[in-house]
Image (cartoon, rainbow, N blue to C red):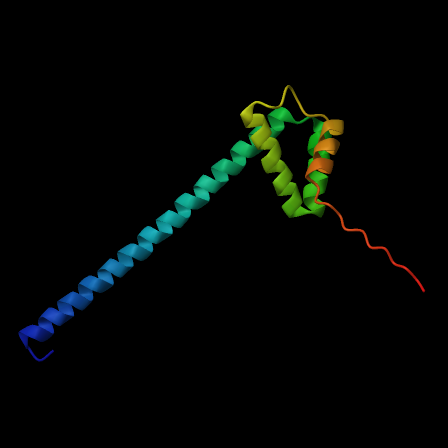
Length: 117
């Protein structure tokens, strides 16, 4: 620059600010990675709980529901994992019990009555 001390000071401050921004971006990326790893661990733990507390038939039924309705399937998985972790599941959930659970968790369907005149 022109050799002015104020200009030099201003340039130093700009460089320092840019360095801080770079560090934040790198640190922010680490946070995202940490969140991703935590989410993967939680999903793995949930899958382990489901394998432990569901029979093969119940697991197949749950997977079929998850394939057709992913949001509902995820909701059911969370509910089963919560029940198992709270100790309200005695033994394993079989296919009939899974059907009952799906009926309970299924949202109410609206019925439409069409009247012709």
